[in-house]
Length: 349
Image 1 (cartoon, one colour):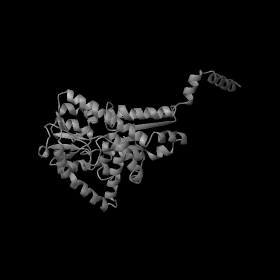
Image 2: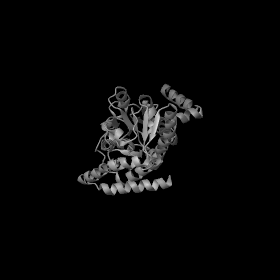
Image 3: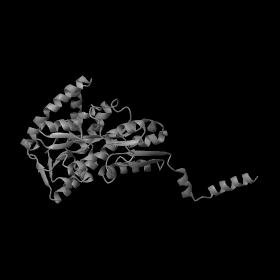
Image 4: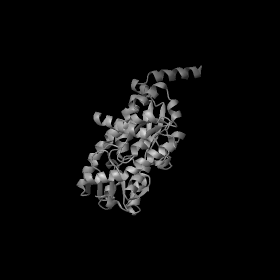
């Protein structure tokens, strides 16, 4: 009898709870997701894309999905291991560069070829997402891709001015993707591959003379303080871009309730790709203005010089098309589809 009275008292007290408190109990998170990435928490990639995306998912799920972000490789490992962390469930979501594991994702490399990508991130991002949906399902089948995107025009940031191809000779430049490295070598540079977190120390210690990154990344690793010269290619197409993927552990996604999977789906694909692309374009303006106000030197190649660079890097494209045939892919067809998607989204953007 005593136990029964205690049970009824407890039930009564629960019913007497304020409505707001009872709603809090009902809406406690059902799914906890851990998101892992390689840049510091102050990076625009987190503050202006990943965090707002996570908040949007949480709000649309009415708090039933909770996403905790772990920046700067806080869950351990190195940036090239991020994709496998999503595949294996070490993290539930990861932001990574397919180019961190050279040759593993040959299809998405189409957009990383020299003088293929557009100057604007929104165009690249929408085109990459469309291309991925048509061509890359098998390439990324080990995870649940949330979205693909690519940044805006990449620049050369160096400790000496780069105005001509001759200025590139012997310059030790960090590159982000295999094909960017090949393009830099074709231009005469000594190209070194390394994950972005290693760049500041490598610049400070003169292990490298510079790096190729978009404007958006510059302040998060203080490149504007480590070098004073910034060279960009005029117009479109531009020298290079790097592609990104926001990927989810497939088992985690499939184990979620159907209505929560629908929330994730609603915030995937072109919606998320556009969200990312806008951030990179907006920050390109903000950061370039900041660097200019610091008194750093901003250089834009003239059109004739840019044409020389494009001609010098054409063999990188030719060799890539040949290598894809050896892997059972039609590189020429992929290249044509990529250029068509870029042209389509240039008109629409």
